[in-house]
Image (cartoon, rainbow, N blue to C red; front, top):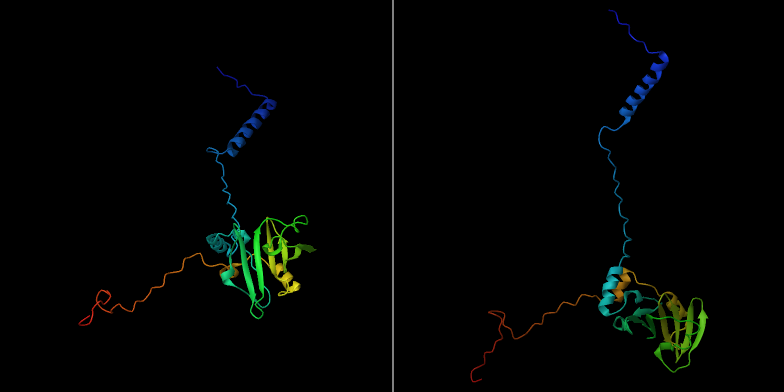
Length: 227
């Protein structure tokens, strides 16, 4: 018996063919293995480099008992640092003195915590001389102050005051002002000249004249005959 094949209409075959092709393309585009994620590691931002000499300044200042942020240096023509004058002011402040080699005039730099304003300027004596009359005059960002035969330029900073003072009849005001405006934080070379080393000095061996150059080095205790 002859069986007749059933022929699907063309309109029915077209949607079936499109569906099959779409499935094959979707399968071809899909990843063959499990999905993987790309991990991007962020490089941590570098911390700012330390200012050259700042570490040495901190070590030396703390060895003296001085707060590192209160260490300043200045300069004036003809004046040189008196190294023995460098020291602590108050609790952890800083002070140093420069000397004129020709006239022996002194410039004193003092840095201590606190503030100075129009309301407190007259209350603060010049040169730590309490009970003396004080005058105050605004000069730019600084205060020019006089009292007890001394004059001073005081520059308010963040949480502390930088003062440069001298005898009125020994140092002219313009020299004092220039030295005050020249006050700044020391660099590495200035720190080395300004602050003593934090390392204790190595002991110097003492030579004894009574030690013989031979044997175990014990003193020679021999006495002459009859002694």
